[in-house]
Amino acid sequence: MTEEDYKNGQVLLIDKPLTWTSFQVVNKLRWEIKQRFNIKKIKVGHAGTLDPLATGLLIICTGKQTKQIDTYQGQIKEYTGTFTVGGTTPSYDLETEIDQTFPTEHISEELLKEATKQFIGEIQQKPPIFSAIKKDGKRLYELARKGETTEIKARTVTVLEFEITNINLPNVEFRIVCSKGTYIRSIAYDFGLALNSGAHLSALRRTKIGDYSVDNAASVEGYIENLKKG
Image (cartoon, rainbow, N blue to C red):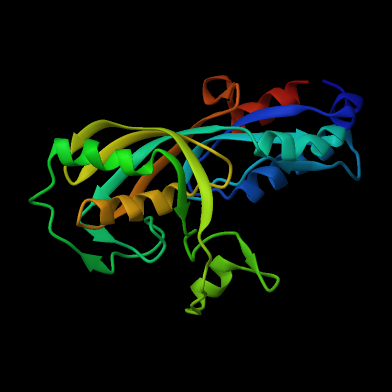
């Protein structure tokens, strides 16, 4: 691809690595594209944040294609991952330590599969306090990391499919298909409550956005290598 191709607009499918922020992926690719073509400025953005502890499909848009970011963000998403039952964390995932533990002896395969039914369709969920949502100009995770508590309003999201794919307690593997704005970490927390226990998200991978699949995505390193080869 040429400099003009990137400026006219490209859609890049990237498999985000663990611990990277979505912003770091964008910054890295923007820097590499600028270096490759010796250009000072080019627009690069992503269509939907993935948490640092999640991996999987990130749609990156360049140039004029950045105007379509909202279109990609609005598409249905599919995730796979693992809930760990018996304990909660303030961030609802492994970013923070377990703060409360709960009994799990009563949790059966039947109970797990029955509990998923509560989450199908339109549901109300509160985003985690450790999230990128802005309040008074600051991102919630910035306030949460300082120990400041914030009241968050519940929002309506849609879960189209929710299935348990493997059970090896305390770990429960799942697949979820859902609308834009759904926090899988919040589903993990609420799922724990539905089990009369507690749970947190211990692994997450985004596998699809609309018709785009992570199976067709490149690693950051792989994409950069091809970019340098021209």
